[in-house]
Image (cartoon, rainbow, N blue to C red; front, side, top):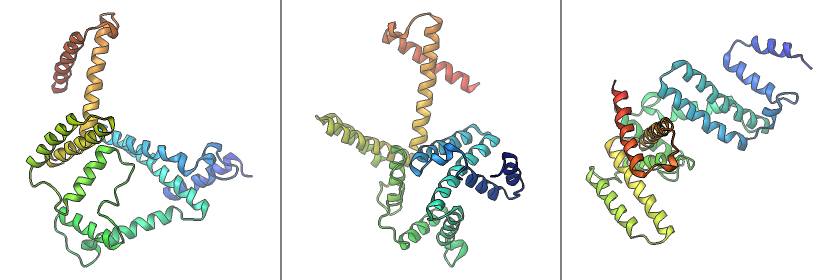
Length: 270
């Protein structure tokens, strides 16, 4: 068995960064490797994949290039980790993953690597869908991940169906649909009916946002952040007054809420 120093030196002597990463992963999963890494399965790794992807989004929003680099590395580790598990099963390895995506990019960009033509981003998307269909795709919507957050999934559904003309021609259509769905929600009497109508209402709002050119998931996250900031302001004010929030009237809390909106908006514009 190699000593820890020998293992470290062995890793550091590998010049190619990707080869080094893959070798480290194999060592962590080895019989005498890391107990935590050896314990992981594809199922236990699922939440880490999602978490790392969201941390990449946070780094992008913060505009910190170094943080972005670090988070992309964490996300890459998840791809390497899952590839290692499949390699141990004899299914495929990381290079199989890289080969598959390379082949897919070649197939789906015939306007670059073949005899196709596409001069606009819209034409590229049309070509992409046509190639996917030739690959055996059963439905226009079959490629949408089932685990996408609801608002994001609804947005992708609307985008895809709009490409084949299944969409309103202007803003008036989705706007009227919101009113229609709200009316149906108010008429619903059972919890099952209400749940159904709330879903339809949210879908209508998502389509309205799409026609405005707004990503509904980002808009919702922004609204969440604003709410949290304003509510924190109220909490701080109540601490200053040395009073528990539970004892405050709704009128007082509403007044502090409006004060928070004005103060935070003013700070933002300075």
